[in-house]
Length: 120
Image (cartoon, rainbow, N blue to C red; front, side, top):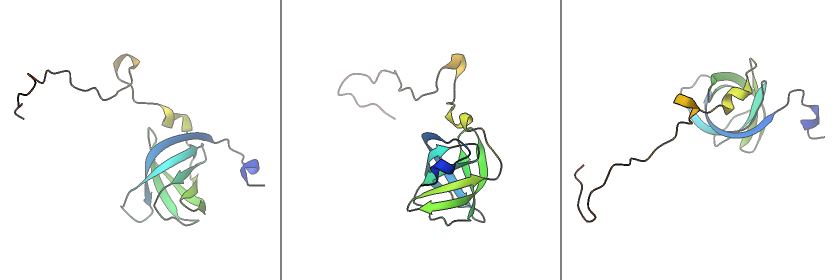
């Protein structure tokens, strides 16, 4: 048994980037969130954590969430949150007016005649 059969809280697989800050430090580490539930998450990154470490993770649409490291396996680790979250909020994209997804739009401004240098 690998432990997944013992899970009491369903986890939702996803991929998003987050910031992690170990308790007592101000250094932020960029990590990947591989799955998320109301009670915890699986993260992956270069940051070295140990079982029992207290940390905060900044998750999109949720802000900073406090938790502790439950397990570590190579560059992946499990975090148990202190307070439950709503994991559905992390999936919501930022929307603009009329429900449009905010995305980068390249400028449509004319660049002038070919071969002409544009002053910046």
